[in-house]
Image (cartoon, rainbow, N blue to C red; front, side, top):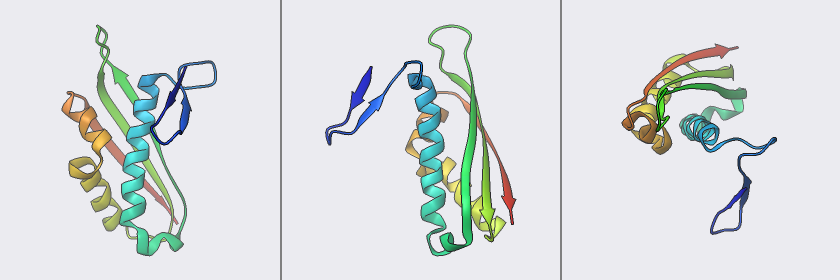
Length: 118
């Protein structure tokens, strides 16, 4: 399967080499929040060598097998203020990341941790 956007961008879906729709949802949640972090650190991005989010989700046992919990672990490599990074991530989960808000409003708990590596 493939999904195609109105602008012609094609995404493979649900094959041996492509994620399932639920895996794509977790990836989209992580990507959305990481975009918020990148935008929030825009004036300090030259101090960031790398950043990523490891994400895992637990799903309900019975159909519909929605996410019941999501755990996200942010890693930022570079010289950035931890207090600022935490504030940006908190705002992402509270009001900025549309994908994450959809996941949490569906009833999933969302927990996150942060590792800043100099």
